[in-house]
Length: 250
Image (cartoon, rainbow, N blue to C red; front, side, top):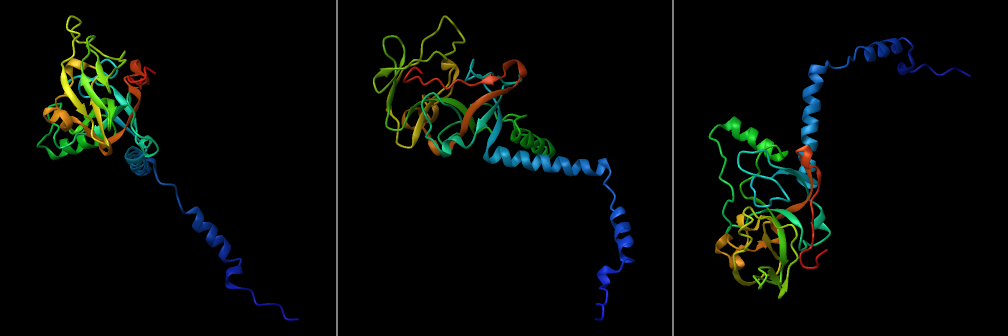
């Protein structure tokens, strides 16, 4: 029987050449790989912060002492869970970051720059939590949800929800001689919305005042970016963020 003719692919003379070709594929120098690695890391960071968890910087003192922040100082960096409300509804006691509704005014002075490079770097820093967030982003604690009636105050100066006083151990008073909350008329929170207030109760521009107060101060649940979970910077303030439910005391 005649032997089959050898295939060109089986030519042993080709093997050394293939080997030589493989050997010629040199590893990129580190200075060329570094930009690629940094680009991949940046893309992954953007994807994670866009869909899973995002780092925010606290720019104001309205959530003292739970969250530290003040103009011109180093505020807390917090990790915000972006997926929790895909599976559960926002609840009283949750500390949330949200987009301010149209009726809301900025709580911190705008920090815009006419320099294109500075603006771009600030936007990138905000994305990864190393610069102040968008001026339309707020962080507050949910006090009441859609359908509940909220008002202030009873004889002990406590906020009431559906006629029952809240248990709020997280309240912070800048002036210990003025531990008195401002009163406001009863408001029934519209369905699909939440009523939010700052822990630094006398230094927080929140649902009581935004949009002139009343129902205009309520925030659509759809505007919530996520739930604040942890303080990650500075190191001395590492830890979880309380979600004490003021309505149940748990």
